[in-house]
Image (spheres, rainbow, N blue to C red):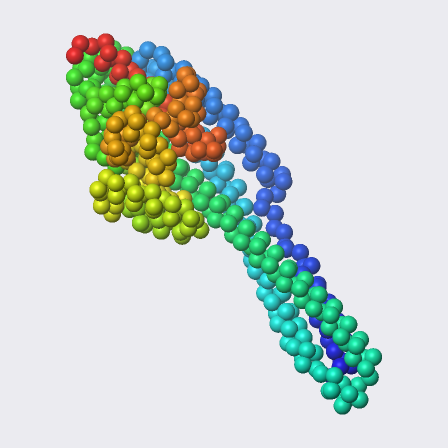
Amino acid sequence: MAHALPKIFAALFLLIFAASLIPISARAELAPAERAALEAELAEIEKEIEAERASLSEKQREKATLERDVAILDSKINKAKLGIRARDIVVSELLKEIDGKVFTISDLSAKIEREKESLEHLMRKTYELDSYSLAEVVLSNLNISDFFTDLDTFLSIKKALNFSFTAIALARERTSTEKELLERKKNEENELKNIQLMEKKRLDDADMEKKQLLRITKGQEASYQKVINEKEKDAAAIRSALFNLRGSKAISFEEALAHAEFARSHTGIRPAFLLGIIREESNLGAFQGNGNWRIDMYECYKSIGYPSSAEKQKTAYLAITGELGFNPDDMPVSKAPGYGCGGAMGPAQFMPTTWMGYKNAISGITGSNPPNPWNPRDAFVASTLLLKDNGGADGGSSAERRAALRYLAGGNWQKPAYAFYGDEVMGFAEEYQRLIDILESSPQ
C-alpha cells in the first residue's frame, strides 16, 4: 500500500495544483473597435443634445410667439429622440457587460466544482495515510525509509490541500464580487429602460402638444397671441389652478406658491425652481404609482442584498409614522421602479433616513414638531433645504440645474442618462416664473 501512495499523492497533487491554475475563460464584453465606435457615436449624440439644450434655453427666454413655441416643442422632440438613441447605446454596452459577467461567474463556479472534486479525492487518501500506523508498517515488512518517504509526500500534499482551500476561498470571493457587479449592471439596465419609457411618453406628449397648438391656431400668429392673452390675462384662474403633489392631496397654485415663498425666506431657493422640482417629482409619481413600505422599501432592499439598509429605512420610517400617530401601512410611499427600491415619502420624495437627517432643521423653520413629510409646507421646506445643500441657492440656471440633478441622482448627477430630469425641472421653472410674474403684476 505504502509503495503506491507516493505515486497516488503526486498525481493528486498535480491534479489539484493544475486545477487551481486553470485561468478563468475570458470573453470580451465588447471588441475594442466596436467599443470605440459606440463611444464615438455616443459622444456625437451628446454634443447634439447639448446644442439642443442650449437652443431650448435660449428660446424659452424669448417672448412667446407661435414660431418660438413651435420651435421649443421641436427642440424638446429632437432632444428626446437623441436621448433615447444615447440610452440605447448605453443599454447595448450594458447587455454585453452583463453577458461577460454571467460567463465569468459560470467559469468561476466550474472552477470551484473542479477544486471540490479534487479535494474530495485527496481527503480520502489523506485519511488512509493518517490511519496507517507504525505497527502496520512493521507487520507488513515495509521498508521504514519508504514509509518516511511517504510521510514527506503526505506533508507536501497537506500543503497542497491548504493551497487548494485558499484557491476555493478566493474563487468564491471573486464569484461574490462578480455577482454583485452583475446585479448593479442589471439594475442600471432596468433603470435606463424605465427612463426610456418616461422619455418616450414625454416625446409623445410634446408631439401631441405641437399638433394641438397648430390645430388651434391654424398656423396664424394673430390666433396664437389671442390664445396666449386669454390664458394669461386671468390671474384668478392661475391662482386657483390645481398644483398636483405626490403622496398628498393636490393644492391650489396660490397655496403652493405661498409655501414656496415661505421656504425661500429661510433657504434662498427660488420659488419657481422649487415648484419645478415638486412638479417633476409628482410626474414621476404618476408614472410609478403609489407603493407600500413593506414591499417596495423593506423587502426590496433585502431582496437586492442590502439588509442593513432595509433595517435602517424601516426603523426611520416606523419612527416617523409613529411620532405622527399614523398607521405605517396606510401611508403612501414611492413604488419600487424596477431598478433599486422605493419608499420615498410625500411631495419632496425623501427617503426615511434622509428625512430624519433634516427633521430638526425642518421643525426649526416650520414649527412642526414632529414635521410631516406628507404635509406640503414641511415637504416644501425639506426640499429647499436639500436643494440649498446641493448648491441650488448659489444663483443662476446652471447651479439650479446641477442641484436638481443631485436631488435625483446624488453623486451620479453627471451621468447623461439623468439629464432629462434637470432639463424638465428647468423647463417647468421657466413656466412657473412666467405665471408668478403675471400674478405679481396683477391686482389681487
